[in-house]
Image 1 (cartoon, rainbow, N blue to C red):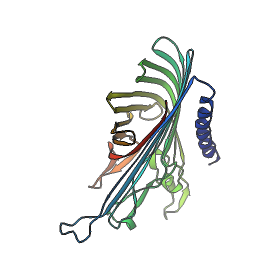
Image 2 (image 1 turned 30 degrees about the horizontal axis):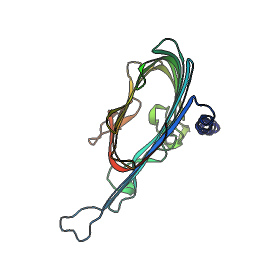
Image 3 (image 1 turned 180 degrees about the vertical axis):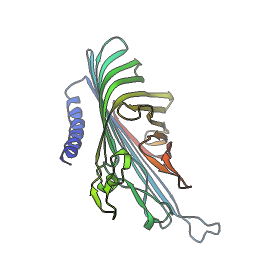
Image 4 (image 1 turned 30 degrees about the vertical axis):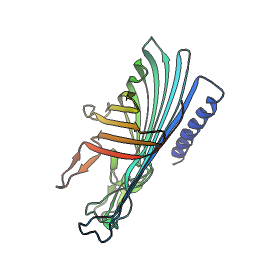
Length: 307
């Protein structure tokens, strides 16, 4: 636990230091973007029927980039959170993301960099499965820092233009944290599950940490593809040398932002994930790794600060 708190403190300190230095060093470029969307529907004595709904989603991006001579240091923090309420149900998560990338490079040639990469991913709130669509039967399937993914590696980055890059790392260490003993006991997200005696009593707690070592590839594209339309997409691939290297983890995250005016914007998000350490149970009761898909469409308020 202490290591986790130290890590989170370090992440916040990194952002604050980066912003603070930007004021004194013109080699720093710091900026942020945020948006908040809200939707609501209400029915009273409506003959056609319908459920009252409330939905809100918030997004925040912060970047702090340093470049001087043949060296560069890029930091990108993506945060997102949203909830939806339908009828008399409790609020349920519609979006939840913490994603920090810190990347240091030394130029090797015009388009290549020797690179070191750090990445942290997690979420803010507890996530549930609702097998019967009733709040009282919900099953906890995730939590804050459960899971959390930390990766660090060395490699090369190919960047032919500012808006496109390919990072290749044949040596990347990854830690999967499940900071919830109940989930760890069940073996969630690939950690070693608890052991039980014949009476069902736990004789050995499940592990809350899993270590992987393998190859990592990240492809990024961020560009205004039309007037007031920005496309951001990131494809991540990871193969664990230590266990089933043929099973490649995939995380593909895409966001399209449309600026209607200085304070109103629309956004469309699509994320696809495949991880063979995360079994999914379908509606027929079959359990196994599956392609996970999350889609989001919203219109709301937006702001932009910095360069």
